[in-house]
Length: 284
Image (cartoon, rainbow, N blue to C red):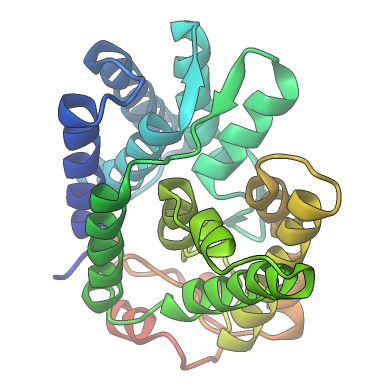
């Protein structure tokens, strides 16, 4: 598949429809439509205001991934706040940038912003039952094949580090293995691992930088969750360490990722020399 975002959109859309229709997700079709309209409308407006040369048919794919992820995770009783999350997710890509690269994963940035700014938004843990979890797990694993492992290193490194910490804590406490495995059996954890921290536009450019980044996010998330006893540890951790990505890119430079359907990069954005990103080389 030329653009891996199409597979991601299909996976998230099927999960959302199945969740609303059969798993009783606490989101209505109208609320989901509002969130999707807000991300697409904001993307279209920001494209026009910024003079982006990319076609809306391409940029809307990233916006749809953000919107579908928000539909699966963000919960509020106020439809205006749900729409605000969609607007923040997309607008942050244009407003918060360093050296032409946006800083925060749109979905993660919107969730953290809404949690900080209002007390009327919460995150669904994504406990969907064993059947839906393993079906989604297989779909997520398939995404690694579709993306040709372009950013699978950061996903695998995060799962390995976070899983080791969670299981290690249980072994230290003498807990049965069913407890840490149940903690990891979460739809929200899969969404985070395969659709947020793996975002090629906001992770470090080099493979060494991405693995270091994943380990730092995992360790901090574990500390927030199990030492500070705060919920949404992975979200807080990813938002905090995203601020360190420009420094990691400077210390460990490599070619910047470009979506396969995006226009060719300008010379100023294609001067780094790393060769660990097959899609980057192919797109350029």
